[in-house]
Image 1 (cartoon, rainbow, N blue to C red):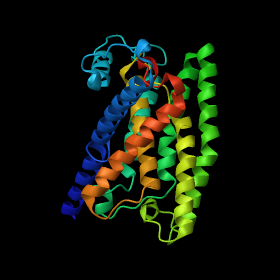
Image 2 (cartoon, rainbow, N blue to C red):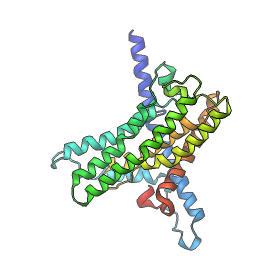
Image 3 (cartoon, helix red, strand yellow):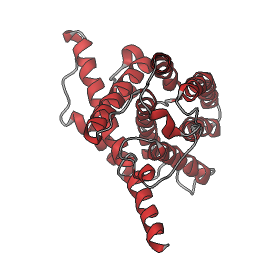
Image 4 (cartoon, helix red, strand yellow):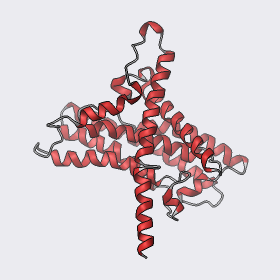
Length: 281
């Protein structure tokens, strides 16, 4: 009994901290932001290009360390409402990591240990970060409240399309199961392939509505949206891409598909502003 408990705790620790949780999200958003910046440089006329910054690939890390080192953050507990803000910021960072850890990705230790989760669990967790971001804006009051209401509107707009795509994938799955793991089965008949392609296109346009802008006023507000983008990209790859049976090839496809989804969602979210540091980093 004790051995099973320790094994379960170990699986959760690995899933949350290493793969497919925090470390995977960290690598994905570093690669995604860097690749998006390279694309911006390619498609920007030479006369408008800015000089490449030193250590550009690790710029998010430097920015995060700088923000974490600041004193007197606006989310300190001494400020009125600081405790509530701290809880909201922490939830906005934790929810995307938990969503990632529950995805039935190849090699996920939770599923190797026999865990099973319903199809609605991850979308609920992915909705937490936009909600906390909206709540923080509403707490600020004034003009920020309008921006907070706008973020709730974006969440509501994307919800029907996301739920419809998930429902379609569950309906055409071989066992008609409501478990996340059942959605990873490779298509066996033409209707399953068609539904997966259509669901992938719908999700690629709908998921960016659940992404928040990065803010540089506090470390939590900086890293939360980056983790959210990584979780959304991996969620798309898990639902849409048929993973090979061999783990190394599955991991390559997963990382490549997640990176593609990350960059495309950035492009759809920011348009011609893709790669600008104030928006995309």
